Picture 1 (cartoon, helix red, strand yellow):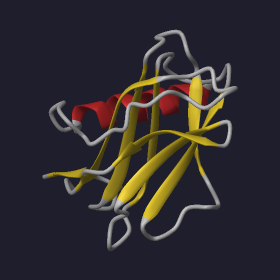
Picture 2 (cartoon, helix red, strand yellow):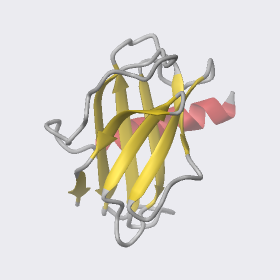
Picture 3 (cartoon, one colour):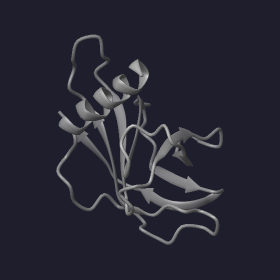
Picture 4 (cartoon, helix red, strand yellow):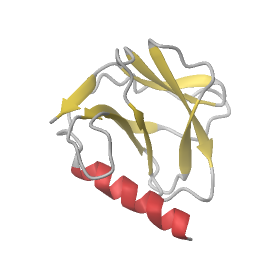
Length: 134
């Protein structure tokens, strides 16, 4: 229960530092066979704003699902490379906010050129532009 509350707080804090919505370079394609999820919008940004007990650079990924009742989490794939961060979308009943998914990690230098969202082994969406938030 405490863990779930912490995840919700992190997601709400991340939403405060989100860049304005707009074209983030998402593919917006059809999900692969067997994938029950569709992405309506995906964005990524690097948070350069320092804060208490937090490093100055964090990479944030925010995904809004087409079905507001979908419950998924994003897990970093071992297939990720320096150029491509690959996030696997997994269905779970423990998702903190139905219809949304978020991921955060320390930002690498250089940043990945592309963030790929995968579901059931296939690409469901991709982010090609990572915003910088100061």
